[in-house]
Amino acid sequence: MTHPSYRQLAALFALALSGWASFAVAAETRAPRPNILFILADDHRADGIAALGNPRLKTPTLDKLVGQGVSFSRAYIMGSMEGAVCAPSRCMMQTGRSLFHLPPTNLRKSYPEFAAAMKDKTEGADWALLPRVMRANGYATFHIGKRGNECVPSLDSYDLDITHNDPKPEERARSSQVHADGVIDYLRNRKTDKPFFIYLAPPVPHDPRVAAPEFMHLYQPADVLLPASFLPVHPFDNGEMIVRDEQLAPWPRTPDNIRRQLADYYACITGLDHHLGRVMDCLKDLGQLTNTYIIFAGDNGLSLGEHGLMGKQNLYEYGGMHVPLVIAGPGIQRGQSDAFVYLYDLFPTICDFARAPVPAAAEGQSLLPILTGRPAKQRDYLFTAYKDVQRAVRTDRWKLIRYPQVDQTQLFDLQNDPHELNNLAAKPEQAAKVKEMLALLAKAQKECDDPAPLTVANPKPAKWSPPDNLPAKKAKSDS
Ligand SMILES: [Ca+2]
Image (cartoon, helix red, strand yellow):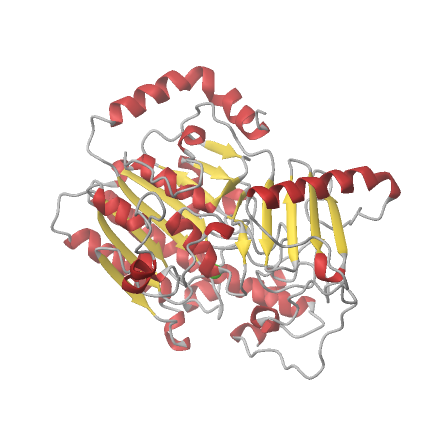
């Protein structure tokens, strides 16, 4: 079935430009291989870019990127089987594997341990790591970013890996600058003619949310709007109510605290945007900008008061799995796509940019056809998962979230209720839709080899009250 997103893009571009795009791709095969700069922000929400509909934010660099390329409004990670959602997200992207097909070893182990565990498997056919594929295809590879909750065997495979453990609080405010400086140093001092693949992954705008004073001063809590779906407390136990991230604000959540946290979050984003601008200026100075693909994405989403939640351990649209994704570069068109895509689709996409064969182990779908306005089969629905406590499937219009451990179901009409305010699951007139979406969810689970049941024998009570003996973590933002 042709996806509406493709239709939209196709209507705009295909007739006029598909011939041009084919020509451009063909011409590129004779040109030097392009560079690739992949920027993965940490906990950057899908709505964390001004040009994508958040005018309260200041993100001139990312706005420019949006204007030059394709932005994906329905990009997601598949989910997480642990509270640290960063880790499986980054591992999916660096291996091209979906959530339930990640290699069976601990992905926080170093490369030698990983390779030893995979000794009976064939590299390329059974497993692949993005930097190794890029290096094998003639790229100089460089990672700069955090090491905790990363795909460590992949980081170990970069030609140059500069990793920082979590910065100390006093270093947090400079984190975006330090990471941008690292890329600029690399670009200015590299001694090879090889094209580069840079993975820039700063721990920003992840908490604690502290930016340099000039960015902190830009946002005042009184100027920040509360989320449309703000609630003091989540209406039931979603299976992960007191995980670390949920303790970043006291219960019940208050408008003042949420506004303060949003203001700090925006400051971190604007700081990151400023320093990404310095990287772009450097590329331009070096004459590399026109031959470089630039990818900007977030590793996971984040709730900041939506539905009474503060973390990424949930499946709401303004929640844990929905991420920003913007791609610009040679031959890429300008526009927006609402195709359902996963972050791990970047693995084959980056291979395509590099004109490298896509390893058999990579499961994602290359985004190159969408980016160049060519016809391509798109996903009809999108599946997300969190531990054994939450499962969701969405289509163009409908979304169902199932909480098996407490026997709760939510059905949302995203077309008329994008903030997921009105749960329609108990409405008699929606019984057939609930049944249809549950069947689709079960189908998606089967396709993804997800063994979790959608019903359990003795569900727990869904009712939940905040613990009164659990002090909120002292986040900087609580002040
Ligand atoms: Ca993250």
